[in-house]
Length: 268
Image 1: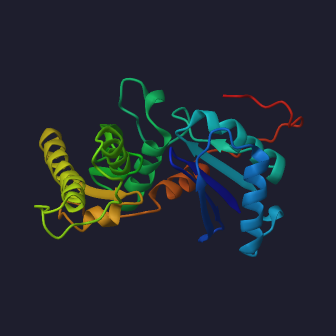
Image 2: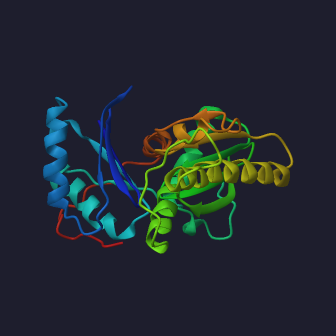
């Protein structure tokens, strides 16, 4: 079975995949200094609870946008599961061109989303990922990644609003029924929710105009379903897009060989 690790700025998602389906998915808050043993103890208990064994894991793949966390995640794979993980990098075989000035700068999650979305939906795509940052990634007809847009994420914006304005409370994201808020909290919820809906609609329209043709819009990330309720421009929702991208990347690339001396860990 394949151990898939998606390390984002907010959470690390671990999943186990057999030949046909996901056998378990678990998440933990991202902390760059969390040790490999902390990950290992936590993950092993969940794997065993799902009726799986350590020996069932025969390969692993990691995608991360938090470089400082990579060392401990790689070591966990080596020490706890005796596998050398494949690490998602721009230099791997992705099966598509990365047509930007510096491919190494592109976050692994954006390339993984490109890989999975093109395989599933085909055609020119705009992929909107509602994560710590809200990203818009553009995929051409042939599946090439051609760039995108990066914006502050919704929860990041809410926290900044609370921190910077003394009289504004910390609130959660929700869809208000009215745009005009008649109290502080509904007014804040309206500004964030409908403001982000307007941003999505505006940027999608501008990207389509610049691309010069019809494009399908796919959304992923924890808030994708909530935001899709407020707009017609989002045509597909796939919460597992990044995990599927990691699985597909592992299928395309050779399984790395575990080094004999697991103490010799490259910190890259």
